Amino acid sequence: MPILRDQLRLMVIADSRFLKGQDVVAACRRAVAGGATLVQVRWKAAPAATVVAVTRALVAAVPVGVIVNDRVDVALAAGARGAHLGQDDLPLDAIRPHVPPGFLLGISVGSEPEAERAYPWPADYWSVGPCFATATKPDAGSALGPAGWAALARLAPAGVPVMAIGGITAVNAGSVMAAGAAGVAVAAAVFDTGDPTAAARALGVALADNRS
Image (cartoon, rainbow, N blue to C red; front, side):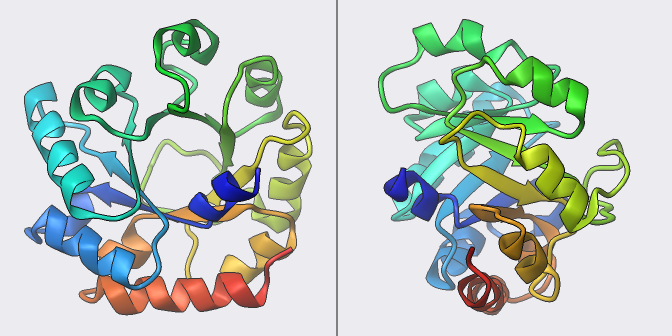
């Protein structure tokens, strides 16, 4: 899956909590200019209509894929590339027959029981974490560290790319790439910096220097 792996190299998560008044389209365009390869819309508290509008605007504005956190219905309505699901969302295997061919479906995995549950699902990629301590998701659980991340990643089905998420910065991204990550997903490390272009570029350098 070389094309998918390239898309997963640097996913930036457009989370309203970290944009802090920044225009989401402008911020994401700056992140893509710095090397972001995929944008995830995570607009947890907003009504569906608002998330559809934000996602549509991003789909029209950035030259990379846009996916939506949790909301498959929103992703389909907005013409997004796919959706990212958590363990508490509708089971991915139940959703797959109802989305068009090529629609990306990713799944979050944070423990061995979750890996066992997700293993038979036809996910396009896994997102395993948290790798490091993070304030982005208070309910994310204890940090796995690169070794713990690698142990969970090995439980993914053969051929399914595994991303790393949780507390990742340009300083520590190399350690999870060296552990076998297909790419990383970040929110605060890009959008809570004041310069999404420079932050994404710094992450891109770290990823390129440590690609497994």
